[in-house]
Length: 470
Image (cartoon, rainbow, N blue to C red):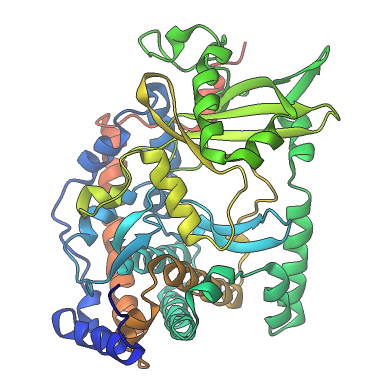
């Protein structure tokens, strides 16, 4: 057995990494001499063809929604930026809307990263830079100005720096038990207004359960619950409102049970005996396609409605997992199965994960992962943020990211030493975020021009929904 390095040796390794990657070098935004439209087309390959225009339509809403849907562009750019050489599991799409609240298996409400479609081994700086730039773009988009954006990004990076240093003093087991709960956030909130906002969030989350969303998504006919078609966002793959074409291999399977049977069978194997036994108490009632998010529009995403003998529902979401944008531009070992990649990354990085998180292979070899749909899940409403709220939220995101990296990577000591105690990293990332926000606005204009010229087809939700009005 190889002896462990001392904490002093590990700290020295972190400080020495500054020689090859000075902290000031992180102000550079990378190689941006590329065609954003070509990269977007590349990331749209393999998606449901009729939904790709909806993806672009949602991205057209603002530079911020464009940024959310274009992780591949920033990954390309980050490949040419400085990194300290410490590589471990990262989120890969760490923008501020991929943080939020959800329930642990013990029903505590936690604040954590909640999207891992792009997770992979990579430089930890990529996550911090994507988060910082997203904060800058959001603050600017909502009209708060660059001065506040500078402050918000600095606060986020300083929070990441502070908590990474704190976590460097914790053992791996202590890190494994570390949870950032809403109850904990309420206790440390500085003002009554902030505490009340957290209490309101807890109340809102408690109403977002399977039982409350059942009547919103489905109707009961005889003894069977059936999901309502609301195209283009919800539709039955083999129904009259399908957006699948006759050439699609899934449509050729004929009915939803034939499609779901192999997905569910392999999914159960990934859960373990206890979770499989629990799911034995539920029967399948219906399955439909559900469009989600901005960047995920067009990827295959199914919701399975199951009901137990007490008429209590359970929605399982099965989502296609394709190659991570991180591994397109940073080569590192990882699982060959893309669904397993997502599940392993999520379990490594989250403080607590969905008890029904598992992976599977669908018909014709597509990699898929499964989890509950919207179990007490809530996200931030940026439009309602005051300036102080933005600062507080940025600090929370920096804290969560520091915890996720410390747990997943086991290198908090090295990263903390690399960051140091000064403002070098926060100043560099403020400069990075400001410059990258400018670049995103330029890319957004190229994207808009491509949509106007017909190079790309973009359609809104309302426009596509009108196609189905009798």
